[in-house]
Length: 142
Image (cartoon, rainbow, N blue to C red; front, side):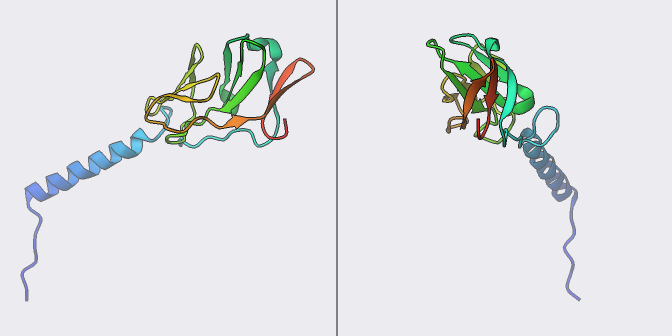
């Protein structure tokens, strides 16, 4: 009968270390709340709020809908999905007009959707946006 290999202490400890590190990698791809990283953007028009909430040259984050709306200096509105294009995390922080992803630190310009800090390399997805009766409406069909 052939000899069976056995695991010595070093092999067991090395395996435990690899498993722990792999677990950390999986945890890093989750939103800080522990929720899955993939969020949803509107699949139909949604009423986000009063048009007056977004000042010229400013932006407003609508976390519950994963949307940011910005207004250029000339008053034109733009809307973008706030699902990070790097790993799919919902972006939950707006500093001035810069969106900051909580998962890996990517930053985006809320006025243009462009990446201003990696690791993301693709801009945010633009969404249709309009005003109706003094309200901001964004999403497909808006």
